[in-house]
Image (cartoon, rainbow, N blue to C red; front, top):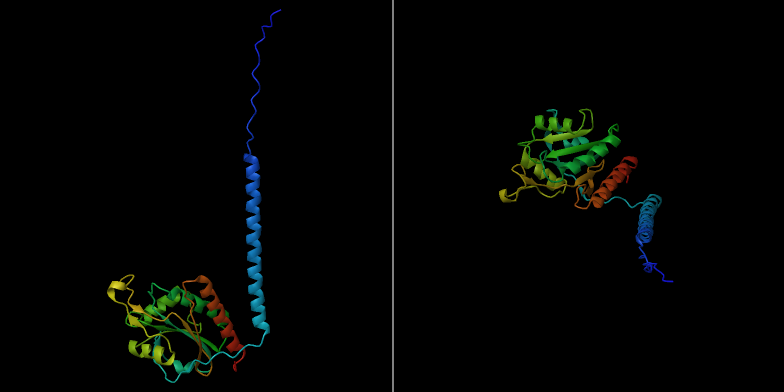
Length: 245
């Protein structure tokens, strides 16, 4: 008897597709990297915290005395009142240059001063001073509007001063030992108002009128800028707490 049944082709073996398995392996690898990154981050944070605790517990060295302010400067505050910087003797003072349309780092400097003002504005032995780099532009009315714009109240211990440019510049360089301001050549200006190159550091002055430190609140590396701001805040607090520091 003839078998009419058509022979069946052998079943083809299905390829072993490992997409899910590969995905699982990838997830395991990603998880490992995440755990590693988290561990490194926690280790770095721990080291920084231990460093700060050590700084607080160990005896602190006296702050350096950079210079003794010898001269004086009579200028006009944004309120229109004539003031002398020698009137700030007996107070812990932070001074900095200000150019209200500065396209560089003035905003970072003012921000650091705002933080200090927020922390110490109620103290009678603390003061801030912003010195106009371009007094021909930054007049009393302009400085008053600027101060209001950045949230500084008339009652805050913060002078925005203007006056004769050369006398202000001389005080910056001879008494505060800051870098001398200088005109920027026209072909190197960022914009038409980018007129002056000037020091972007904050200057800490003690009750005796001595310069105790310079702090670069504006820095290309954000971590360095943050560290300098924190150091300034610690040093200000130290001088306020201990007049002999």
